[in-house]
Length: 327
Length: 245
Image (cartoon, rainbow over all chains, first blue to last red; front, side):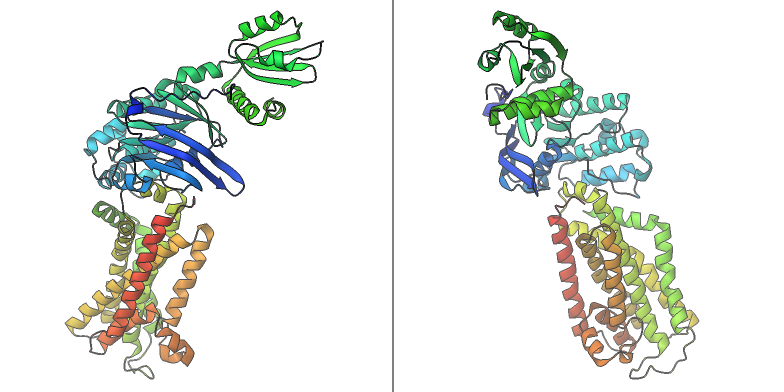
């Protein structure tokens, strides 16, 4: 496990408090597809957490399990120390789902009022509308909204119940840049009131701007869990590729500093490194003479692949197939 | 929960097209079937065509509005994800079912009243005041059973299957329950089955009143039993619905 970036970063004061959300060894499969695999996860009061991962990483499944919309095959999920269903009945959770639709044939104001009244502790309607930025469209019919407006109405539904936990699944889908900024402003307002916010996204920038903790999911597992800065460092990793004339000494290469993954095919070596300068310097220090040396940056997609490769390497002992799939 | 019931009723009233056809269709059908009939009693019964079909068309019209309207709308709401969103609130299953039934009852009441009005004005049906009231109230309350069935079907079936299943229940129950033609025209085995169907018990509420007596206890018990099963089943399905539609 030396090459995975799993650093458990529960805040110091959070460790003492009871978790808001707790996943214990949760597994969920759909047929042969494992959407969530042995997931362990805890969220603490007041955290703003981004659930980051490429499409199909298990983000939506994780949120469905968290909200009790699906039941796990194995393991347990608790919210506020009880079942998701109970926590929802107590009005402690507000959620905005990707797959969540809106009631048709009603006005925005009526719909938000409904959401407010269905929770045991809603707050004044005008405040909900204002904080979601939909006061100006309150008298429009729900069927006549644009995609971005619909998302803001969904956000209003999620916050109308003044829940302690707000869950948002890819909330900014369909929004333009200014709408996005307004949205995250509204969400920060929720977090400032002491709410725990969990949102799923595949935009690293969003996670970086808003979250104080980022959890990277891949294939239903937690690959990395830390602050946005830590995850960004991963995304900033660089890729080094070169050929060697002499026989490859896998062990020596594996001991290079700042290495996150190592891939050898024949005499071609591909490395991912957090600090390319240090790695290359040490490479020369080994007495190697790398030919066709290339150093390139990693995009977000590649960063995910880097994390995945590292994870697969540590579980299977092989570095070949996943790196091949990533090229 | 009362907010949801109110909102569902407002929504039903706003849907003018659906409202118009649901209200207009039963009295028109009544006139087509019973319009030219004379006032002689139907063979094997005390009632004539005008009386018999007033009750059965009021019942049939109410059933159309609540059963077909509910099942399709609910299936659609499951598909677009509104029901998923609703499940993330503290709303209990019975609240959802109650709201849907209330909305359906809003549509069925005017259609029932219009059939009675047309019968009185066009066919010259004359009854005691209490009989009119009892028939209207009985037919309206009885429509709740089919509203609940509509909710349950909306939950059992998905997508394209909803309409055929709802139609099958609708026509099957209407025909076998004697809403289209008096049961005495059907073979004996069909009459035996019909006795236990909610549609037959439903229409029997009204025909008993027309005959001058109170509705039979057996019919009321049958309807109450079906209501319990349909509404309970619908509420259970609402809570259990973990499929991604």
